[in-house]
Length: 348
Image (cartoon, rainbow, N blue to C red; front, side):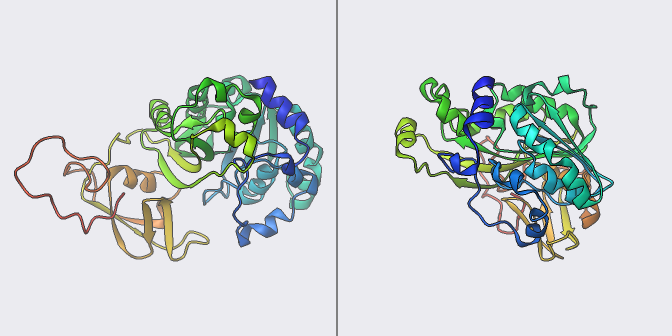
């Protein structure tokens, strides 16, 4: 499949309009605060963009960031401005034609920004160990609709887990299916190139992520994909596809379930662009100044990462109260007591 992907993205697709589905393109508007940064990027780079919109967690200034499947470099040059002169952005891609476009305009962007903090590497995202990247050297790893194009997704996740620092995160968008993809679809060159044939069944993704060390994957947002090309839609049959953004934290003491230690956090409202609330994921929208009960895993995601200065923390791990109520899992044993009131819980 490597040759197929290289041919599709390096030679068949000349610009974004050549894509036949919306699987790799985000229909939402670019946030206003990013538009000035986008306007600094060379038009040739913008026209060769095939990702799922900008995957951009907060607090990147000074960070070392890795972009898997960087293509012609649009996100690299956006991130270059966000990490600033003290940070670094490294892009990896298998397609030489795309990397040539990115490198061709590197001097242009260095002049525009006033610094050069980017690097482009030719390689495969399932073979990151071959790129001589230092283990535990990245604060954040991102990718835009690229993991589905790999034929060894387990190797991808294990490789990037190795490269992340403790407290770092993999923040990425990709395509998922509501069932396992049959061979007739996964081997279809066009469907694979359009980010559909290689889509993981969502439950298999969770198992792979947890097995790679990311014990508590957090879904940030998702949307169903509409396949408007009638020929491709017919080939896909009744399979439903979704675009989803996940964040996976590398934290040594995460538990496989949401455990209750009587903890809570208070968001200070100090993250740029998030004065009223902070969105950790789709189940954790934390209002400024409000005491927000959390499970132990959520506590660690906030207290043991670069997010910590923006929160106050209540409690510790000295006392355990069982599973956190309302987190989707219940004690399996029969009970003769009424269920506890869950109306006041907020985590998950």
